[in-house]
Length: 630
Image 1: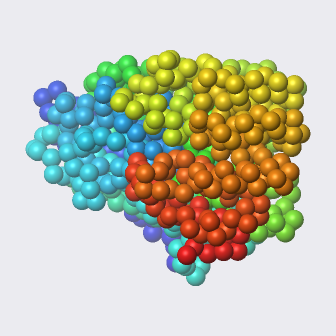
Image 2 (image 1 turned 180 degrees about the vertical axis):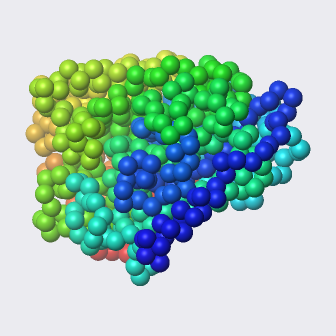
Image 3 (image 1 turned 180 degrees about the horizontal axis):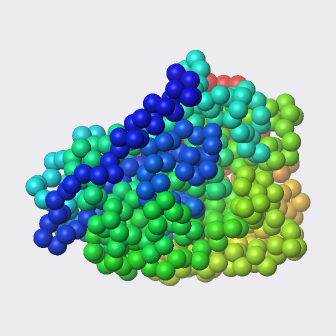
């Protein structure tokens, strides 16, 4: 089927959709039904958002009757942290849930939003993913499964229902196929991607799978109409983060955070709509996933609890437009990174707290996508321009982009005199936000768990005796610039009583490269015996990367002691040490036999998927050393 035929087929489906029908009152208090149609790994590349290459007639038809938010962010550029943001109504870094499958315990006062809806008589269904980064016995749903549906509610009972589709997931980009419906020759290649055959094919494939999500959305809307519920139901359509293409998913650029957010309020419930709502209109209000829980409670007539950190943008308790919107990134599968970000809607500021790592760290799941591997291939061959090469190089500490003039975000304005005032403004806003939420990302992941033993990370974060935030934050801030004049203060942090301050002190040396490591050699050698394994690991990485041959050997030997995940070992220490070994490449070649003997799985971990993370690190390290696991 060619694109014209596909468009005709989808348009016919859209013409039959749902803007009509009758529905009974939800119950005696007349609460609206609420339907969320959600999709995975797709950004606002849709007709209603101005993407002429897209084929999305069903959601476009919904937008023509409803309203789109011009800039909506998923808060996190990957599924589980983004979904955690939604279900809790909190920023995951504030409760230690920012890392993939972190599976932290929640503070007792935090409840999943469906609990509040059920107390109001709602029938709540989730079809079908949960995959949150927090551990709880009560998920809040009446039913959460691939068969869950609002049709199973009691007569007259109001419903809240999610229907999630995975047909646009990153994995579908690499499904076996002979051709694409959308023409690869006509697809737009972003300025950060190389224009090669693999990029064109994967981007064309992406538009194909977005069309598939649109068709399923049309089916769900038609089901609502056939059930006579269209006039009774408020409908949301959104994606869970940006596209599955590299530098979108997993990255806090606008391409990774920006999602479609389309809402429809039938006339009966238009008094609950955002104040700027107009059929066929657009809202310039910035919407973040942390806003969804308080919004759905507001629609149901429930005042959002004070611990929720978002802003209700509709319903009885809707709040004024926020001036700024925030995002974050933590560990993705086996690879650690740490980014925080803020936008005012025009300018986008990113703060890289791991600038000593390249952007494009190897994540096995990502590198299976053909365009990702081809991108790295072309970089290694020296075929890329500056904008296309940047993904494979060390990050700057700060990035600032003009989303209007530079939507691909390739012109970093952080050093622009003209934009200095904006840089200072957004830098301060982001720092204030980190302080306000008591961002737990400034602890090594293992310390989030160890410091909160007997409590929860969210409670621990607000106890200054366990988490002296200001001291640790100050150490991280000075560590992750590259100002040479700060080195004396950074070296002083290595003598601090708090292990996280010492950890950032060593990162500050590593981040400044060879000369700083040489000047700090004595402190780094002493740090190899630190009480904290995370301090020892970063010290070993520093000496292994920039020290002389004897120091490199000393560093690798230190990592070899920490890296095996033994039955009584700590998975976080093992992952951090194995990441460091992998980054030393050939300098660890003499230890290949010892690395081969590392166990593939060890003791306790927050989630069984950590076994896969450890194995991925082992496999990559041994492949680089020309060895194989025994």
